[in-house]
Length: 575
Image 1 (cartoon, rainbow, N blue to C red):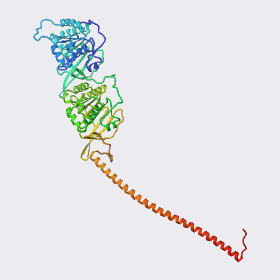
Image 2 (image 1 turned 90 degrees about the vertical axis):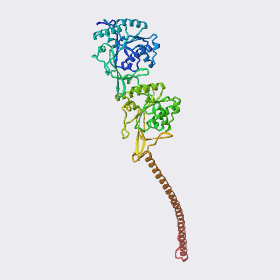
Image 3 (image 1 turned 45 degrees about the horizontal axis):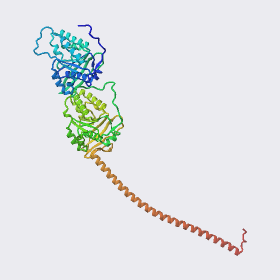
Image 4 (image 1 turned 30 degrees about the vertical axis):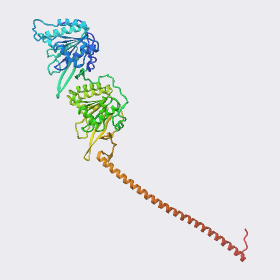
């Protein structure tokens, strides 16, 4: 083995893969001018990963590439890749070269065998197309022709030195044991883990009958990376690695703009409606009108002229439109004009990650500004519940970054009891607004109640309101309490009727009392007038009596004086 390489080892640089999510995990892509091992069992997607790396390099980053196929013929590989929509025909003209190097089935080996001849031919081809990337797919197929482990090590290191000398960014794909998620040294080619600069492990398993694919970067020399296992799916455009928000990523833009919930009284309770690009969660047991409330939001969005999509895990699109029409929510005309798209999620199969990728693709294709998922809790039933919360995080991060207002319903498991819960997604901790619907059973009648558990960034009502569905639409009744208890339905009607009758009786009694008081007042006024007249008469009589008495006294006095004068008994007094 050589102690020195034919070219100096350069500082770690990144060669972007263009694979959604993978470049975020590795901080920019694969190590440029170095080697990467992609290992996994059958059906993990090793060949797709490697080919997508080459296609994106040639198409997006101006780096031509070579694909060396040791197992499957290149024409079959390209035929299988056509479903991803990659422009392979165009790229093969000048920027992408396929080399078939499959060992012949009837090959009889004699003497020593090495890779020198193949590498010499590849060097000429790489120079012709100015290749910067290369893939050796299923390298284990050709290494199996070598007689022992020492010979395999020799050829692998020969290949490694050749790649370093030509400054090519390389991917080796290699098989690991069936059912083994790791690729360790006791296996025939485990030594390659120590030779390469980056190692990526792919695994494919079945959890509760649902296919689950996972990716893990096992090592990456000279660079930090996400060491955790990340789920991925192979979708319409190839690899899609699910990642959570990366540290340092810019926050989604926020706005004060409000959008209507479709129910005026609910808008009032929320201080004006939902925030634009917010996540709204509506929880409840079956039959509490979760779909109806989310349908009202969809109708309001369509009336504003906003492209809207409903994803239903419970019903077909035509059934959703018919059922909502029974409560005054008219969606048919919006569906016909293609402003609204209703998708039955029964056609979306696979893991929760696969469902999420499919929903995102449909929403992007529809250019949706408002999205309803009914119920989002169905995602937690698709495979491992451990990953369910991560799916919810990625759903919300995506909707906020794309400024989509997201309304999700979530089905609670227990139909009885007062506990408020959430599904395995635990989306209630992430939602901006949480509305809970429940039943209130009174007097043998079941009524729907609605309350706002939380609504971040805005004042909101803490009252429990009765949710009323009718042909005219959806509305909320004013709160009605009696004896400290909220009454709904028949009990409320009976209580309101009793109070109305009592009020009418009270009003009649008041009117009778008023008439009686008016009569008594009139009688008193008559009596008062008579007394006043009598008082005046008494005053006149008193005045006359006083005047008569004074007159009599004066007459009497004059008479007395005159008598004394006549009798001469007294001399007249001088004045």
